[in-house]
Length: 397
Ligand code: PMP
Image (cartoon, rainbow, N blue to C red; front, side, top):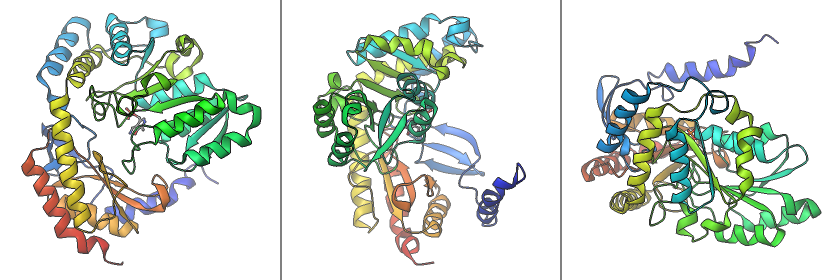
């Protein structure tokens, strides 16, 4: 088989989409007006698929901090922290993240994806076993693969199934690593974390929680599901990203296990990549302060979320199981999802279109992410567009 033959099915899929005049996976963002508006293909469009939950991408303090860091420290670090050293900002941010979580240790990574790759492949090797939720993000799957560990998938958000699978592992269960997400990125549902912690404790296993979508969104100080559920001290490792509520790029892991520090030496995705530029670190530090005092932003975010979720539900859409700033409309076929996505786009609303196999249960998804920066008027426009498109979206092909 030729090297390029494997792209044939992709090429056919892409051609079918482009022949309809849209590329849902490559929208040209020509100008950004605000956290919630941009010009796409010459048209002013509401951004409703950004993960910019708190809308901090244009926060004045974050912008000022990033500008100052560029002026003082330049545009990039041009290498990894192992080889080139750690700038004071990287170290300061690690301290601040550890304090934020009241944890002993924190490591900052260049992306959230790398945080999962680095932590999972650093912690586990081919003698270990990792249990992951079936709906885990690709970075978790990839981290597991890189580790070489045995991978066991348990049924999505099902502590009983997790229990059963741990039991089958016998003695190995006491050293197993369990991985869950605070809010799942596809359907926007919270992990049943308290029950999962009970299971973990009964076997003496370890738990890693990826709070990518819940940081800034859940908990009084925005620390995610671990805070909302009152279990910060009971998760062995908490991973997250800077690319959503923190409005930049990067990732982190916090833990009370002092051994977390060894990831810096033992993990290729930490050692062999360049560290974040000073401007990214500086804006992230400001955003973290804003998140901690972000009760006002979270109140607006949840008001918009509840309004939109209820409206979509009343309009007959099949949604994820609970209101969350990730709101997924589930469609039976790719064609229905594409029709809905295109209809929203024509109404001046940009959301995410996601096809299997990236989705759970073989459904296609049109996914909204709500932002505290959306105005009430924008939320009403989104509601109106979904109502108008409800019949077209559910029509059989
Ligand atoms: N974990 C989860 C659950 C995610 O949804 C994502 C990104 N969507 C990541 C990790 C990776 O984060 P990043 O995009 O910042 O690399």
